[in-house]
Length: 452
Image (cartoon, rainbow, N blue to C red; front, side, top):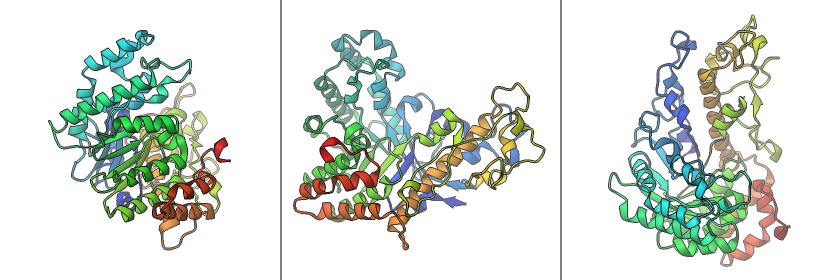
């Protein structure tokens, strides 16, 4: 049995964004169409990596969003042992921003009347339902933010909040914070982290001044305060928080939303260690999440394997590979093992479960006119492979920098050194500006005009 959490726990930690459909499947014995045909004596429960006793491999950390999970009690999150599992809740800010949260879809027709939409939000039970689910299910959870990026001009923007002013969105977010502050702890103690937003440095500061009275137990960096703003904005905000004594100590966690780029992993570990050292807070942690392992499998029928890494920065990436499917593949006379190189499968799967399976095990539908040869079992095989590969790649990215035999690209090693210098500098602003381009190149960020 492989316990990946034990290998990852000392570094900035990746929390895969578990998707509900999968979370419901992996607590069962079988799935539709497989009652009499579960390959290699597998159970669907074998794919539940949140289970510390999983006989193949486990990783007892994930992110789960209230938008999906709050109305379902029969899934891997609700079944998880709270004493052995780290579940980071997500308060559905993204779904609010995109207009896909079920409770607000009917408000879209009122988008041209922001005051009416704001009134509907204030009168709804959504905040209470989200807080209740998070208290019953999560270890840490962000507060509910009204994302500033909701105000973009995209013609596909369906959020009822899209015509709210920036100040109105900030005001609602502060009201949400006040609600969480006044109502927390009714079901179970929960550590909350306050979401930070800001499309520009100026709006980031305006947001911060408004939400500062409600810091809770840490912070979630969203939008351009987080990965959309690049490592420069992330480090800048961490240092500002540290200097205001709002990082470390009782402020235990910083979470970077929607981030799984491998070069960032050791950079965030360096920042985590620097915060621990300069605030005397050995338990402080940085986490990050993405839904990439699930999207790659479910949207494009692709899989990834553990990244090559090494001294070439080009190898520090997760490269999706199309799964060979179709009538010809499903009906090959000789089965194709998933864990070996072949003409059919030049890039093999590398997770423990895949050692038992063939490509044909994933394609039970063998008719010439079957639109889709694979099934739900195959979906879980790919998801399980992808989560394993992402987690394992983040672990190895950290080992490549902080392990006994470092072999990371020099630019990443240089950036890690800069981060250590930053947190120990009297005038860190000067050091950050002087190294802005280097940090961006190391992280794979777009270098903005004012930093070129």
